[in-house]
Length: 393
Image 1 (tube, helix red, strand yellow):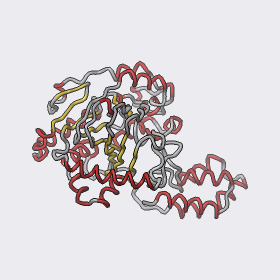
Image 2: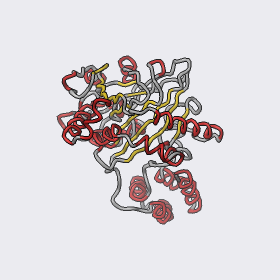
Image 3: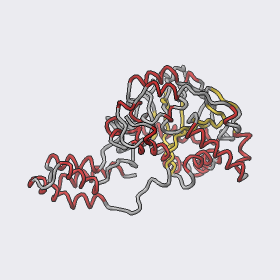
């Protein structure tokens, strides 16, 4: 186990997951005096009235105080905030909904959009890269939609300036089932075994690299299945392993909360918060949310590297060195790690979906298979060409 007094040096493993510790952390209560800018606290979630607070975003000192409060909540407190009336003019939402409905219709007819992180294909409607598709389809509507100071402030509160916006539309039809509890990108998209390979401090850092958000495109009463949330669960250090554990998932199911949302509301939460889409048990509500995933500006390398060209250049030598026994399995892995792109994101999720898991293949995955199976240069080149085609925007 990795203990707090050691500063979480080392690695988390399944023995690091202490259900009693999880229960203690998630049984806290958020007191209203801890969130003075909130209009109210409901089920341990602070609710912010953006109609009243929007003017504060134009005043430097007030803006700084509000953003600092949001950051504290996301980091050290409940882990989630709700911005009531994030969109003062919901006609902007309706215009975007019309664009998204048309895209959904076209992609359904074209059998596009296969593959979802959690729902079986066809169980809901998903638009990958909705940000770019909306911009290209309706530039003016896009500008009106993202010209939103409340959303920008929430992003800056957690990530600072120069953040990178992405968005995916999710529409859950009546009868759509709930997700299982999980954490989100980055480590939330790894298997438990893969997550355990990352050192403990990386588990703590990953949550600061992204912010999760959702904009309600319709009124969402509880029966329509708004997101199930477990406040304070982002504080649990080994949570990227624990959410795979049945006992922790059962604890989530016993204690989660749901908040009804109105069209134009937005919710933002720490990606390490245990959460899951709820079941749509309504008779006729097509629950649509624009899922915002915003990334830190700092998640980038310093130099541009043509890793495909490098990988194809070194591949014949790897095959020869392996055949001569000059490189061990660990040494081969080290070469591949220094050469090929080991992370499959960002990608075009329309054509390179996470079928069979939460992440598609990376260059390094393909190269490891190629070395193991003794592919020819032509086979590797063909596989890389296919990957590039799938990933192309």
